[in-house]
Image 1 (tube, rainbow, N blue to C red):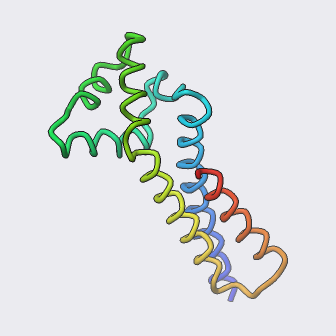
Image 2: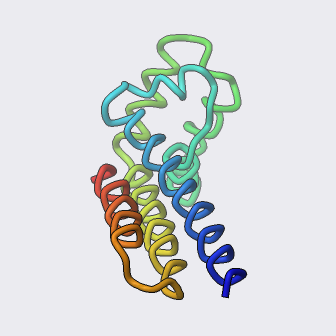
Length: 130
């Protein structure tokens, strides 16, 4: 029915959107030297990294983030810590999970060129974060 198609489209777009955003956040670290972080934007890789260090009773990154990373030295230390953590890898896995959910959302829809394109798009997006 029409409602199921709308529900499938909504599920796809929501999950795809999240996968895309997380992938974008990862690329910001891997290709743009953490410019989001420099602008004070805290994204998934940063959160995962801070949690990882905090579990080892190292709150340096958490404190640096809370201080706002105003000094270049603080930013560089934070960036190095994030790159040396599993934060980016964990964020990548999260993006993959959302991409997978997006594809699964389309399960109810009959096979077509459109469905295949959307499936490829989700897989491509998730693939960008590796």
